[in-house]
Image 1 (tube, rainbow, N blue to C red):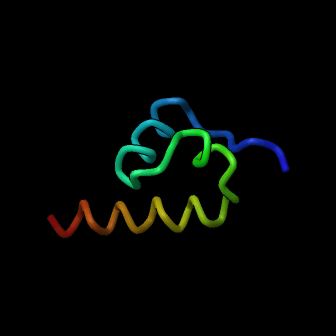
Image 2 (image 1 turned 30 degrees about the horizontal axis):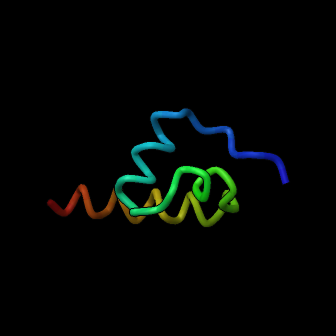
Length: 47
């Protein structure tokens, strides 16, 4: 499986908000990552 095509900024933001190491984010399956991104957006919208 190839690494995700996301920017370093996005990886940092995700690792901070999900409390997950950046290395783990980079190796996460894309559909899981997209689901987590959607969750974060919902949280930010509800604030």
